[in-house]
Image (cartoon, rainbow, N blue to C red):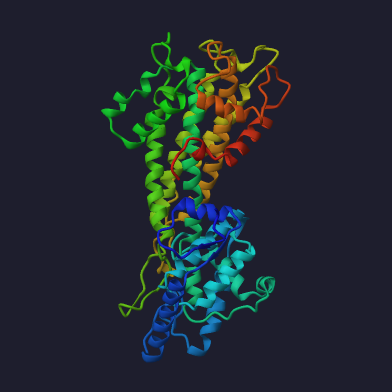
Length: 495
């Protein structure tokens, strides 16, 4: 039974859990315990301001390089509005809707822990916008990934102060009080949302890559030796072991895979699947651990530790951990795409009883020749996109913010890589299904698990033996299938 509401403030939310909430229409709320933490933090900050006469960054000062400028108490509300408006400087394409929902979820979650010194009404209004489906236009460009994702989060903060958004939920716009503008703008939620989406998709794509490559393995009459447990036992990488076991599980029951083969060795793109897919698996698990920490963290500034009587201005908004992790994931996914394209090349090469270009009438028909061209162009683009953003930094805020992560660029590049991998795997799937049918020793069948999977594929595409249908149509159908199909459930993978 699906819960009617989800506690966004609860302890230790997983990536897949938060992803599932964003994909659904479920409403969110924060617990009474969380509300108490928020209220206690706010009261502590209010008492502090009433009893001291010192500068507290972002509370009664300017921002960035203007941190030494004292702001009169009467001007603090105007300061918050000015901050949001001046930082709403994003440009480029709109952030995808799912990512936008994740930004709201992770920002609300971070504020709900009660270390930000804001009023509960701010959090509740963000929850109201989320539950009502009211989201602003957030742009993909403008964040340096340090000081938080300032420009995109300023766009989020506009919902609170602009009448046009508040009238959609039958409310008056809020007047932000001290610390609230900065609490909203500081944070890694733009980067975290792209990272969360990409990790969850990467997990699915890793398993798709194993399943699709298993069809290619059978169609190309590959040897079982490469996946033997003894091979991985003396090179004990977790990913390599896991991948070899999963391939054997997928191909269990295939008479073609278990028979002796006439070929002494297979090309690396088949023989080294455990080593290559496995290395990507290890990278995905590492990045998953980084992002899991991030979505359960507080990343604004300054931080209010009411119980310890401390207000600390620090750097939890700096996105270096995410930037490095996302660049790593982009490389790992690019390799899954790269080795997939190599298998496509071999499947259409006319080797091992397969007709060249997987057509029965080569010459008059080009078959699936050009699908490899398309895959190659995408793989080449992925190599460009996998160039790390995190090695760059450009000084900002008059030298005050003198090292930045460029993690927002890592995020948007990674998003493109993820979607490119879906397409290259769709191309391999198309070729693998054709090859399995045209391989005389397989005649369209494989293991029980693969046959079950193929029964679902055959509802989407038909295997044509002539060139009467543009491959792009089937590639797009299969790509959508990859997007929608629950591969984890199909392979009985724990989520």
